Length: 338
Image (cartoon, rainbow, N blue to C red):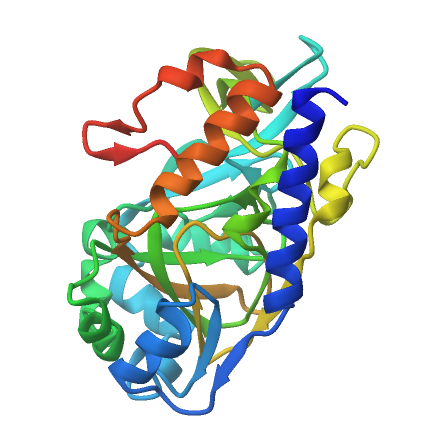
């Protein structure tokens, strides 16, 4: 047996041991937890949880109707992620070049009223339109709505000993799906309207994800037809090509060892998604789906961070053959390349 085969056997044993110990259990809090309870039950074990009643006091909880949003920000120009297939920031096959790329959305500027016209069906669109600008989008483009939500999740902020790095505003419909990925943040995700379904995998299942490195690309409208086309870029990004909704086990055999955890977060519920958990997200709601999420920077002194880097270099670098990752600095200008 080769050394590489031995390594893969050991990694499978590691995945199975974690699964046997933890299963697919998700803690559900019927009421917001105390900071100590949250720290002990969810943060330290690095396990997701659903918290009920966490933001019932927000004016946004029942006040964010489309009519109200039009009155507050209808004329504001916002950034909308537009894709032909609903997958932004995803590994996508281009039939023209017969190659897979990590494709980012076309970022279209439009008034919020125009976006709502699309969501409500008043303006037809063949594309998926999703308000998903990150890195503090609530204060950047939706500051008129900031008073309708809390600046942070109090019990989470106290448990972590910090305030959120970013608060983001999300609005879309069932056309938009977030591809499988992970983030270096402790994430408190509040579903204000509609329903979100998360397919989750713990960091321990990194072996199963078949992460590889892809040439970047971006969607851009064709000058003549207006249809979105893939435009390759010079840079690259490590990403996960597996779609857990319909995994191709012939291409991605290691994914058979994964144990998906499917969570539906209903309107009025908050999901705690620990740092570095892999997740794919779908959504549904008759009037569109709205969420606010709080990103708290992860604790880099925790063993989870260097362990994840070890997995990436071993699996993507050695096993997948992208040896440039073996010496790559995981931090670039203070931002992690996850």
